[in-house]
Length: 86
Image 1 (cartoon, rainbow, N blue to C red):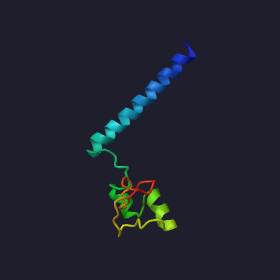
Image 2: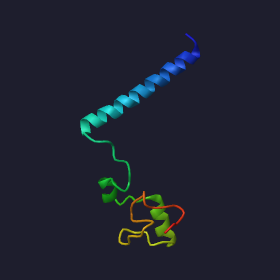
Image 3: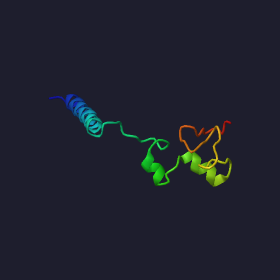
Image 4: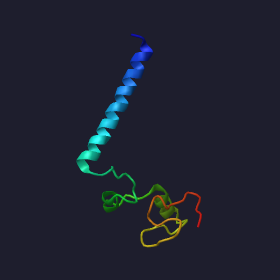
């Protein structure tokens, strides 16, 4: 059996295992894995914040905390724009 065929079969098996694992997670939990910081309640409870939000709070370049709601950054990582657009 050629080496390239073994590599392709191994990669196809790895992708199949990944798809199977994600499907089982969806079937068992009943929802997709919530890895977004802005919508994951456990990350918010632990005080995990968006990297852009933490950087802005550290430099004081923008009021980007949970108590201030600005158009560019409201504690929501998806809303934090890197270019500081208002």
